[in-house]
Image (cartoon, each protein chain N blue to C red):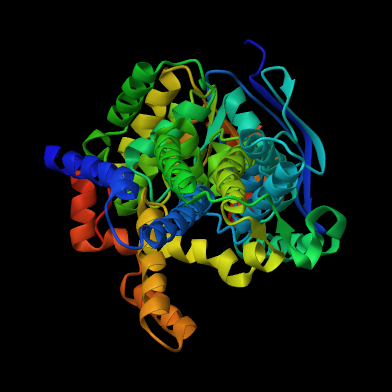
Length: 313
Length: 244
């Protein structure tokens, strides 16, 4: 138990110290890690609704995208970084609250399909509202070199989303989410106000992609619709959560780290067929580890020693 | 006798042209056990689903503790003090026995009224009552059928109900289990909880109930004390068919 906690502490110190390390191509390493953190935030926040509550939200990326655009527009109005982030996040919270009522009238595959439709709807809206969003030409923000700041900021959001997921899972709300996942009608019969609880979960899961979306725009200075609404962008966090272990705390983190690093390796170390290899990895993990990476024997043992319960596969 | 805890008046439910319940009236006396009997398809479970808020009635009233509850959401009705079990058991399969009961305490009638320590104490006490405490950490999906029935009962009790709806809790049990379950139901009633139960096992329903309501083809054909109802000619005809 103690050794495991020491290990965790070591990891945190290591991540904090990387920017100071005397390594070649430091910027490249920081960039890779930063994009990995973005993936982790998306996958872990997806899982509040997708894993704990069992609603496969294929539209999760809209929170990231709306957050990215809202931030960009506000930042270009010469609002400060923090003000733009806060207001952009508020926009996403309102957006999540508004869509929760119509979307949560649907269940199962119907919910997932409608949520996926929302991605395309928002993409078209973004393309067509050119006066606001720059349309298909994209949106630029005042450029700057923000590699180091972004590294720490995104690491901070990772910490926040992991802690938040942990707190939710242990809370009264978390138990309600699980009862909805198990049997929504029975949950309602036993006093769980299902509409309110589902809306709360959706809003909580929208906050973190909204923040990281804003930071993303700030970091790379330019976004366009395909970049934030594209098919692979939209579905990768869902695949990451599922392959890591949906419904288990830090499962999505592991899935995101694994898939992101895999992708980086494949794209930088091989010449051809990147997409196909990535697809093959996803298929193989899905076939041979249906419960996700976290339910793999050795991984599960380490997690249990860290006090994160994972049931036997 | 005091005013009834629940009054059902003119309760009618149509499912796309099929009348499942037709203008049913009856009272549930506070602190008593009321039995609902009737052949298959008589509308018994539909009646429970209406009381628990799963369906909105086509017509009629359900007054519970001087409030109209027909058409309220199930979670609101649960908070007012009505809880239930299901004909085919429905525990939350992927949750532990403990969590199955805990959620009823956290969201049921006593939601917000209990401290964390009181909740944990109540959970264990309720599990003790249905003899499930040794299995507290087991996932509900790993329980055998009798244990699942007990878990459903524990969950319903944990909401802190004034009225509990038991839908064929005894059906499918062995004779020994039946006797034990009957004792448990009596014990629940002795705690002051009003019981409304649906049962096919005649020995059980006649042995437990203070009052019996008979449904047939969605209509109430008789009610009264168990002995009288059993002799009622319409009831005999409904169950055995007309005398030739």
